Image 1: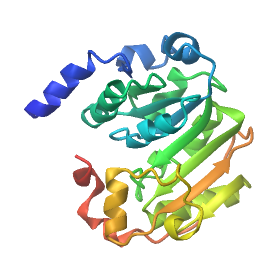
Image 2 (image 1 turned 45 degrees about the vertical axis):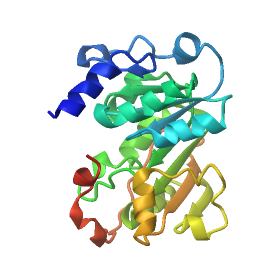
Image 3 (image 1 turned 90 degrees about the vertical axis):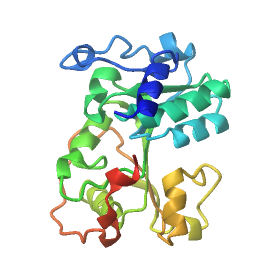
Image 4 (image 1 turned 60 degrees about the horizontal axis):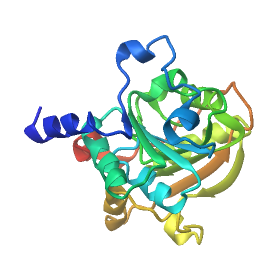
Length: 247
């Protein structure tokens, strides 16, 4: 592990807005803050918005700046990247921001039913060969359905044609309510100031001429979902590898 990563991990241990549950705290048991994030962390009853796979936390922090009457939590397993967002939030005095370092699969151990009002999924790995790891797949929709309020919203922003098409098929197969659907956000007339928050990697995609896709949809209390039986063409431009690009 590089020196910079070690320094960031050490610094994150001192951040009051970062939570790093141990394996024993969340595996097959409830984290001590489950159902208590508003009361014990944010000290208010404002809606909680979750970013799954937050990376450097740019979107979490960007939304928190715009909406001081909402609480925002970014979750990611990569602590060295999360450090940047957490530090920025502290430097700017944003007390409506928190970060959790853990796996998305453990969300049900961390949040109670109905504790989340919105979920943002911004530029995740599309997991073209691993259906169970897709953050908009039926496995994760089932998980989200247990956390979201009945009118809760899911947002997906992606550069991936594959993930956009796959998610569109999932939505259609399960008859989910769609508020916004575009395969070219910045030429659609729908890119308001919220959607125009751009992460470092999003700007890279735009600079390469790759259109940004966006879906806004609701589960509306559904708890069981069916995988679509379709073949989707994989993204050819991703041959350089997402993991390497995000280090």
